[in-house]
Length: 491
Image (cartoon, rainbow, N blue to C red; front, side, top):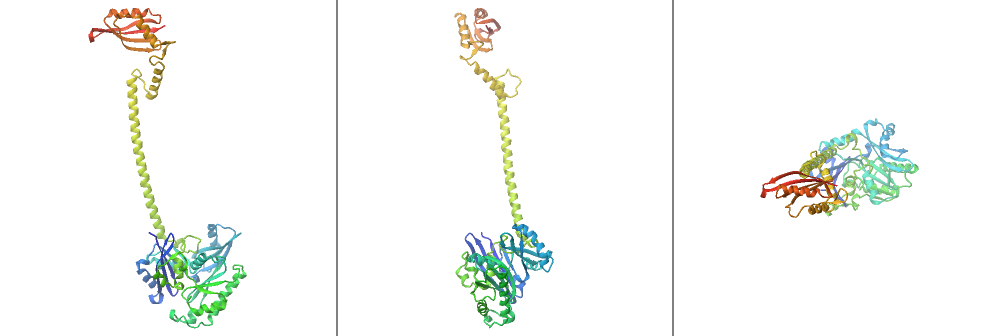
């Protein structure tokens, strides 16, 4: 589910709030609120009234800071690294601001970056920022971004309209006005001016803003014009503005607009952030939309939260702690989940290792048993598998009917010689035949002991055998026969 974003514009006369959700195709407008401070009993009462509506509570809050409370200065640095600029900026600001640098929160935007980096630095008193944070914290709200008033509107206009010529964006309030001077699609200067509207028209509401302007308008407009002239002389603006965009509570005050058009001889129009294609309104919301009043709140709501887009005074001790705690909590959950997964894999690996090791030991025991059964004469077993391979290799050298014993005498030669020497009358049954090098061992059975001697004597006559001996002879219970062992060597 997309997270809700609330843009909160806190002014001298009123607070305005716009709530949106961010999606893949842009922003979806949800709700807007306009509350006059005098009707709500001041800013605290207005905030209480705003947050009585649970629907206006969001995951991300972007709040404005009045430009009149901020000190702005242009600076140049011989390097481009933003981190290095941020570290050096405080030392450069110290002689330019009325209070100690430890008592301000500073941020900057880049004006120009060629051979050197030119920035517009803003220093807001910590007391001012702290007041905003306290008012929100008392209502269980925390600002993710604290932006300088009117800057989001100017950034949005430049981005949506791709304006390259010089323009002026004026946020006009009852007592003060903020001017954002732009050239080449970039903000080059920000100034705060006394508007004089309260003095010239009295305490007014929308129905009384058609009163005739007084000559004090000329003081306000002349200050704006002097600033434009100064910026052109310094080369910050290539020419006078081609258009003036108005926003704020008094942007719809027609006498002021007419006087501005006459004074500057250029078009003056009301900015409309909602006209951008990436903010989606339903028909009912569009009908009741008042751009002049709600531009600032909407621009805050759709402002990108990454660094470098505009100003952000929610840093250092004012950095959002709930978001940090939320991220920290999520990291802990992720870490715990990863630990459980790793523990599961480790346990699974241990089980595999344990059963594989036990299976390997069982195989070794089986191999040892097979070797002991196959080669009972071997008493020292070191590596049964390798020892068995050696025995098999030796056996292959003299396999039945093919291998040779000694020098050129085959097993078939020995059997043929034995068969030819023993008389046919002798009842000679060979039960076992073994050979090892030049030694041949024959186990057999016959009818009596005399036949055993006869077989031995006949074999001794062979030119192939020598040292023919009877190693043993004994009666076999089966059919009263005689079992015997003959040993003979090959010549």
